[in-house]
Amino acid sequence: MLSFHELPSHLKNCFLYCSAFPDKIKTKRVVRLWIAEGFVKEEEGETMEQTAEKYLIQLVHRSMLQVSKTDDGGTLKECCMHGVMRRIAISISKQRNFIITCEGHEERLTDVARRLSIIEDDDKIKTGSGRISYLRSLLVFSTDARTLNLLAALRFRLLRVLDLYGAPVESLPNAVCNLFNLKYLSIRRTKVNVLPKHFGRLRKLQTLDLQYSRVKELPSVTKLLNLRHLFIIRSVDEIGLSVGMQTPGNIWNLKDLQTLEGIVSNNKVVLLVQNLKRLRSFVILDVKMFDGVALGASIEKMRFLNNLQVQAMEGEELELESLASPPSQLQKLFLIGHLQRLPHWFSFLNNLKVLRLRSSWLNEDPLRSLQSLPELVCLELHKAYEGKELWCEAGGFRSLRTLRLIKLSQLNQITIEVGAMGSLRELQLSRCREFNTLPQGIECLTTLEKLYFEVSEELLQRMQPNGDEYQKISHISTVDLILRDDVI
Image (cartoon, rainbow, N blue to C red; front, top):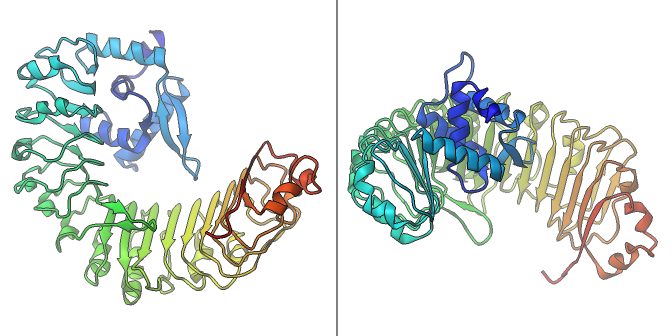
């Protein structure tokens, strides 16, 4: 394949590695895997994660990968490999002993196989496991419990990657602690409930992904001094709040941490988290009102922070007014908890792309304060406003592409002046039970492509092709009208 042979060597490895995935490839996941494999060269002024993301974009631009999904901020979230391209990549990988992909058909596993991707169970894998002691990577996509017999011994001393995302595994053998070269371990969405006692031996570990597993404690995690990414959100409860994990008191020794998602707050955590100066993604849960000042002071020290989520303890107010100067690189912000009014520092968020406010119960119209944010492309207000009217002035929200208004219980009027929201593509209004009319000025939103609207029966009739409101929405290519259940 000419296009493959023209690739630089580091992109060849990255491209072939993508053939291990059966379908969609999550960007951040494959980036961390590439780094663990040693495919990513360090470049001055960039983290290896940033460099790896550039590799991914280059593969997309060369049509070696296709974009499947972008996030609300417009960043590549998922990609995929065309079927023909993947078959070619699997063939080349097999010839080079780069990676063996088992998809339910006979595969000859050799002593020189370096990577193994199990997509469907195969008896050959189990009987031949003694021949693959030189494995560097094991990725399990199969949901067949028999496949996991391969893990019983875990004698793969050279293993760098063990990815069990979603696999039907309930425990990790103690032998995992002898995988001294391991750099990436994921048990996300498994039933594993405890990590082995001597887990701290894995001194080279860079990524530890426990998200949505059943693990409750982190034994010896503070010995993992090379850790860069730690995911510890355990679950999401019935009302949509994340449930996290308590961490050891000296987790602040992990100076290389770039991702810490799911840590439960306490008065010590909010003070000492400022020592993690390289954090780029930070999710902290169960924050108490009286911890807000200390937390704000710590967040100010995180000058590389790109993604921040703060969730108040249920029933507590989120006190963040004391944060004097927010991180200048902040692009995504998600606040869950009673705010009453927007903190003054919101006006300094010049690079913010995505803002989600939930259960904020603001008294004042937030659109007036937020409409001047120059880079904001997605705004979601979920139980975030108690007022009756939202107003957007001409020229406001010049970059906004997505607006979601959910469960604003008193809202009954939206006014959009001519020239406002000039880039809006998607508008969602859900569970706003007092809202019984179209937003005033919606006919001026000429870029609007999708409208999702939960409406009363009366308004539903008026928005039909023969109704008196139809002309205002006739320019919108996709209109989803859902009959609202006002009892809920």
